[in-house]
Image 1 (cartoon, rainbow, N blue to C red):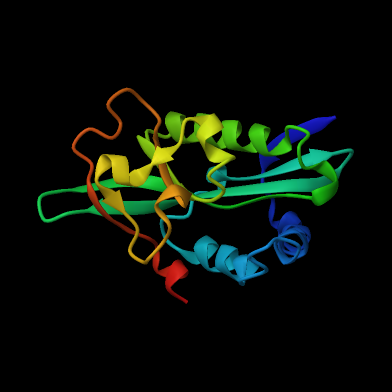
Image 2 (image 1 turned 180 degrees about the vertical axis):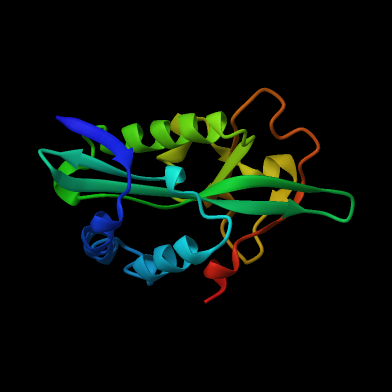
Length: 175
């Protein structure tokens, strides 16, 4: 039976292995996502409630993490979240595990008062959750990225009102 729960420190090694394994098998390859997760956990804004695992019969088969971002312009600054990384063991892909993780993280983000989540990912996957091109809202990445893979979603009505500018990630993403 599938269960989505908050990560425990005892899960860290298994999660790192899952991230390395699944990302290594993608067209983009492994790009130190497990090490990124380690650095995010060291950031003062890290919130354990926004890091979850998907378990099936006591085996970790999926993982997702939300971390804070700022959207900054000359007129304003707004705090939201980014979803990175999200991964599901290949044997369990296309079975609803990723959907369950995304939905659980969204619920937790709303409970904690966040108004939006950004993601850089598959343009044929994330729109089903309500993600739209960030450029539609005047929001851009701090690096070159194809327009259709950089997306954002309001979590509440008006969650993106007045939000525009360039995304600033945690320093963990700089390394």
